[in-house]
Length: 200
Image (cartoon, rainbow, N blue to C red; front, top):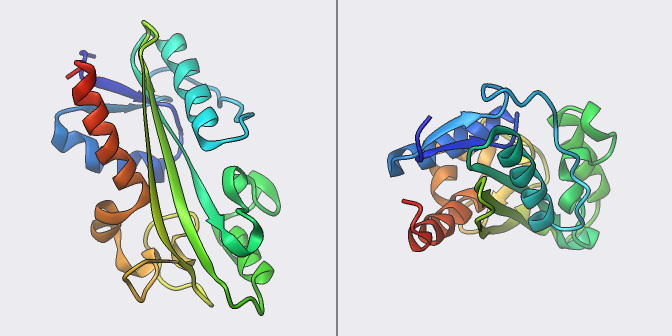
């Protein structure tokens, strides 16, 4: 591995595909934590996306002695007072539930609700073995659809309609999502912070 290699502090294949598609054209190699020998999941005990991203990145950087990048992201629904928020991956029945079970539970919670405004939030944190920290945040506003559609993406993509569009990410597909998603916006901000840092 060289200095332009980051360890992704996650075993989420959906996140890996999105990070790789956006980071590799910028000249950075991305290695999943399992490939780097990290065989455990970091406990996400933070109260904010920023705290959880730092916890994951710092733990993996210390364990591997390579720069580690982590994303903590989730869906915040206004009518649910920001839920599921940092608990998006554990919404409803927890991590044992499938993505489909989680978004169907979300639709059930919103049954009869007219205000369906929501936003995806992504907070990225890079931590180097020397303790340097780079952070970035991105948001994608939109609304929750009345019913799921499409097979693209992962998580809540079949029910989240981004602002300016009439169909959810599940229909719009990866190319569109990688241009306008919360993670794409966070990565764009992260790139600027990375350039300012002198690490690239």
